[in-house]
Image 1 (cartoon, rainbow, N blue to C red):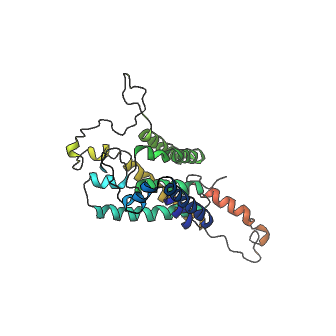
Image 2 (tube, rainbow, N blue to C red):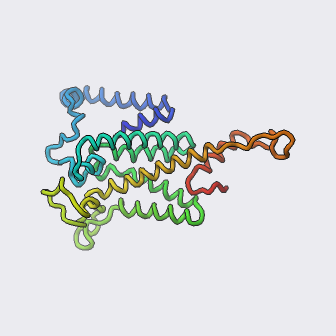
Length: 273
């Protein structure tokens, strides 16, 4: 999953940083061959790392796996559907992340890339969704900057995300009342192992309690990128000779205009400063 950030750096035009990240990754692989040569050969040179199902005790359809692949397996649906969905999500996510970076919102860009990576990874355990923490910080920041009814909407989105991904206790009372557990695995409905690939009704929600909100966050960031692009492309007023206020002296300095454009591109800012 982290390798998606190298692609993000490339499409965002940060080729030097992408080269550094790729070199660091290659260095860790070489270090692995030096320290554990037999295991490294088995993992990298036999195609072992390409098979996401190499977990003898855990199925890809396990409840703890909260990825697009697990969602498709539990639906159930074919591998072709997952591949098609992964290509679409990957391309849209990387494009949105790069667009946000170009619009002066690098934080929103790499958060979009992170959410895309968690969705695309064949195996995304519940702890992999830790990327929701910077997402919550971004949503909170946007809600504070927003105005009027838009502020309430952003606060509602942030509160809903926090409620879904919070580390709720394993039990309401008893010895596990203070043990963090989260919504994943709560008995919202029967989860018999015999039906792990034949889910129906509310099970389709309770078994994908992180994937579905994650897709909602993904869609939100896509819309965020579209809005940022449109605001960035607002044309400047033409210069009309002889008209007051349209001469070169009345133009905002390029550096100042860039700062204002980056600030206006934040969703919910209303363009007011």
